[in-house]
Structure formats: C-alpha cells, structure tokens
Length: 103
Image 1 (cartoon, rainbow, N blue to C red):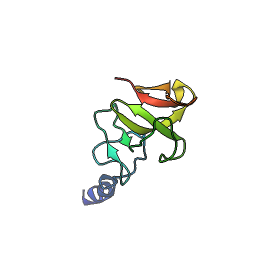
Image 2: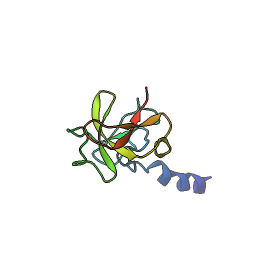
Image 3: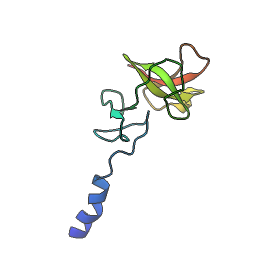
Image 4: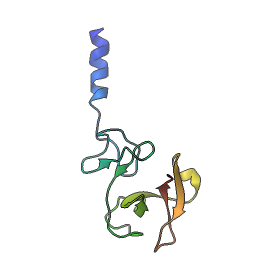
C-alpha cells in the first residue's frame, strides 16, 4: 500500500502546468496566471490591455474580451478549434477569431 501512495504523491504535486487559455482547476496554471474557475472547465487567464493585439500574449493567442475582462485567448479558424462551451468568434479591430466563453 505504501508503494501506491508513494507513486500517487508526485502526481498530486503536479500543479502549475496550464498555459494561458487552457483548462484548469484550483492552482493549476503556470506561474503568473490565474485559474478562473467560474469559466467552463476553468481558464488559465493572462490579462492583456488592447483587444485584437497579439503583443503581450503567447504565440497563437490574441487579446479578446472574455466576459468583463480582456484576456489572452486562443486563435481559432473554426468551432472545432475551441473546447466545449467556447465559441470561435471574431475579435474587434482584427480579421482574426478567438475562442471565447459562451455564458
């Protein structure tokens, strides 16, 4: 039984592996990101300041309005690029689309 407990313990310590825009649970995001648990599946949030801008966001992401905030959001071409409860919608000031929460 101790062998099982020792094997599981490192898995329990694995926190901080969620990049911006990825699903998360409490404390499950990379350093400097916040897990917004009120978003479906959680959302590792990285704030940004200018809607439509890619500056300040990781690659393949752009600044988009998510609920009441501007957050770095995954760029998408179609709905298939987004996870459940997120929609591939246009972003103001650009011809690109981003996966945005559906409330």
